[in-house]
Amino acid sequence: MVSSKKEVIRLEREAVIPILKPRLVMSLANLIEHSSDRAEFLKLCKRVEYTIRAWYLLQFEDLMQLYSLFDPVHGAQKLEQQNLSEQEIDVLEQNFLSYMFKVMDKSNFKICSNEEIDVAHSGQYLLNLPITVDESKIDKNLLKRYFEEHHHDNLPDFADKYVIFRRGIGIDKTSDYFIMEKVDMIISRLWAWIMRVTRLGKVFSRKSSVRIKNDPKKDDEITNEEFPDDLYVERIRIENLEISLRNLASKITIQEPTFDRIIVVYRRASTKKGEKDRGIHVKHFKNIPMADMELVLPEKKNPSLTPMDWVKFIVSAVVGLVAVIGSIETPQADFWVMFAVLSAVIGYCAKIYFTFQANMEAYQNLITQSMYDKQLDSGKGTLLHLCDDVIQQEVKEVIISFFILMEQGKATLEDLDLQCEELIKEEFGASCNFDVDDAVHKLEKMGIVARDSIGRYYCVGLKRANEIIGPTTEELVLKATMEHGS
Image (tube, rainbow, N blue to C red; front, side, top):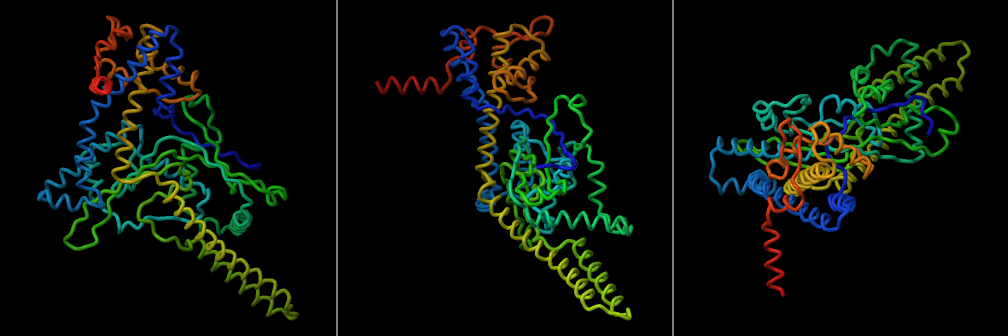
């Protein structure tokens, strides 16, 4: 597809290591020359995982116990059985949020900022309707109280009502003829030209266009030299399509960056008087196009024609009537001129209505798809998934850091960080912003990495590392099972 203007979105590199742990372990083991060292390394990887899993087990148990009280399905019954006061429940729900936000952070999820929301809203992908949240149906106290006690930078405007966490970047491509969308694009450009010529554009200009211009994350002029560590993803939209017969008549491919994972947290407003809804909703989605991020919003209002559509309706009707009255008043009133003008006006109004109907149908399909295909899980399932995510991520960080120190010898924190990122790029063709501080802290806690007098890090030998960690509970159980079996 030929685009008249290139639109590039700049995104910060993330700390998540995008390699499956079994592949990572086997690939690193294969780089070790001696088979005896290879066996020790594989044993160490297992012991590291079991140790990290044990560290987190108690924290995760607390998280799951707390969530059982605020599960929207069965939480109310469990709270009733506990016989707690309102103040005690308030403390427990804030404790739950504290645990959950820590797990989110450890799992490398980030809270969507206003800037990212603006970038998402500045384009259209498959969703062509304005979607808004029915704020009367959402509680505004739970998250507001949490953020008053726990400071976060760059919180979005809606953070008191719901929070959108995001992680990972991908690309979604869709190929189709997009007949209605192309017609809409041509009419929109014609409308913009009329607005510019008649200078009515200033009257009907929308705030969103101003916001997009000042958008710091999206800029055609941004170069890789300015932000070398960031990702650059091109957004290919129908709005930027070059008008040509070939483009209009053939299939085209549009492209939109996606958030690989999105988690939405909110509470519904209480509907019954005197009865407080304590349920906390946690919804988990995958591969959500940035421009269609509204799909994950909670408690959506049914879309309707926008004020701009109504303005177009009214202006079209007024222009049509003026033209018809003008042609009647002329001495030689031409029936065919009147018919043509009326047909054009009726056709344009019908086009707005039918485009809206087509968009409504597409919206319903997308909502259904987001529920069945895009929604991974909710509630307890999402939290369990997150807990496992944290363990996998931490294990990978520790293994890579230890491997580099084992192969390269002593290193400063900066060198270690750089070498870990280079290893990931060279061996796996992936890139990430490696969290070296966290990895080294865990290695020191295990007692298998230390610092010399000038602050450089070094590791103990493989055999010694396995001795220091010692046999884990899992190993002892496995050994006993095998002995019992034999």
